[in-house]
Image (cartoon, rainbow, N blue to C red; front, side):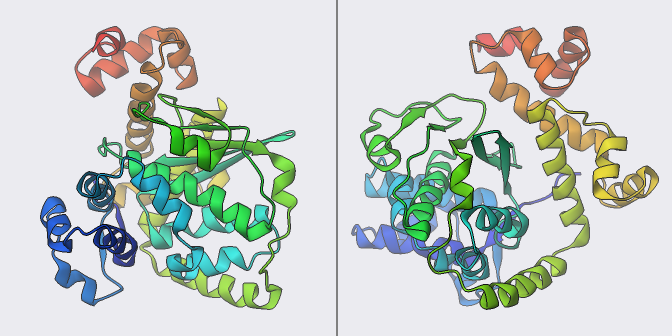
Length: 335
């Protein structure tokens, strides 16, 4: 059973303002994304995440700004993200700010999530889309990684530079703005959207941090998170754990996932069944999405893709991929 991923309607205001500032009538944008502006009257409304992503794509087209998402991320202040923004800027360190962002992101947007992986002196902060049906998402993704870098620079007062920046989408005609903003190697057509940087940056203190206020905001954010539908929260947790397991080459079986969640296998199966899904459905969904991304990376052999997805042998991956897409991995790669 598929479900609709949503984002708070407040998120579109910054896009509308940016489009209007370039001389575009907001009605043009509304028509392009099939949006009812009456929804803006209630700030607690949520809209489909896919529609929000379309706002960015059409905003870029209507303004003629091919770096629309990057420029938005460079200008936007964290406070525009409501409680999510306020809680992260009041954390003691950049690392704690990222952890809060990961924990509370679904309050704002449940259609994507962040994953932080630390290995020795290197940290990887990835931005993952849960809804694999959203194909055109370049500008939302570029906005996200741009705002993360801008936020970290302003929040810590340290003019740091990531080692590498990677995007899943193809390389645009010009990457001049990417190079200006990130000031590092920028790669495209990669398996993940991520920033790679020195893990020591996570210990940097946040300049505006207020420990007392952080405690209060943390409590409020936790309360808002608890109000979100519990099953959605569980499904997103399972998706995140599956994504982490597959990215790290760990065990994605239900026994491992239930152990990490602190509940029994039977309880997890029952809760997921109540929402019309299952561990296997979610695993297949995640593997299907990742397989298409990996197969677009020409340097990865098909047997390597099978291994990365946790299949014991390539033949099992071939059967699963045909079931998901109706074609073989080789046929998909040929296009």
